[in-house]
Length: 165
Image 1 (cartoon, rainbow, N blue to C red):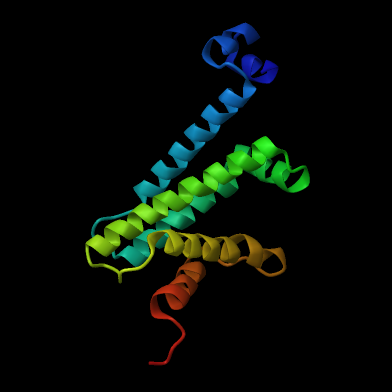
Image 2: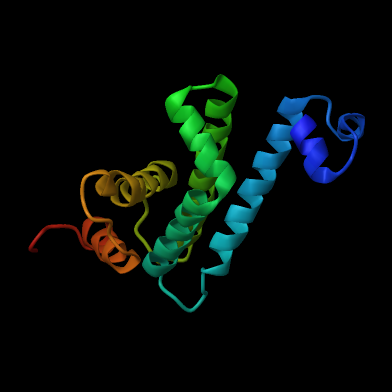
């Protein structure tokens, strides 16, 4: 709270006029971060583009935002190194918001006939986890994939499949 008050150039007591405690302040910061991340993802969705392209760009943008935003970088480090329960809960909240965002796009695509009927919750989970694996896990021991390579793999594994028929 001292650091927040210093950054805001106000007294610590002023912060408590708006937030009961640091957990409430932290929750508001995460809520704002999620809103900003969803806004960035919405900007890359184009109504004249197919679902596959839009969902790729949206997920990539959200994960890119997550990778580049200093707060989420610090939170991931703390979650990995310390495992603070409050941080773990906030990171679950971030992931859940990403899943809900994707799920909404899937539901709309099913309704519009752009994709087959499927379970939107499971599909959103699979799409997100594939992206996380291709962006974060792959580069732990290999050269990172660029956005186009990830889009091509995403298209191959999710939309075309590996079948020759």
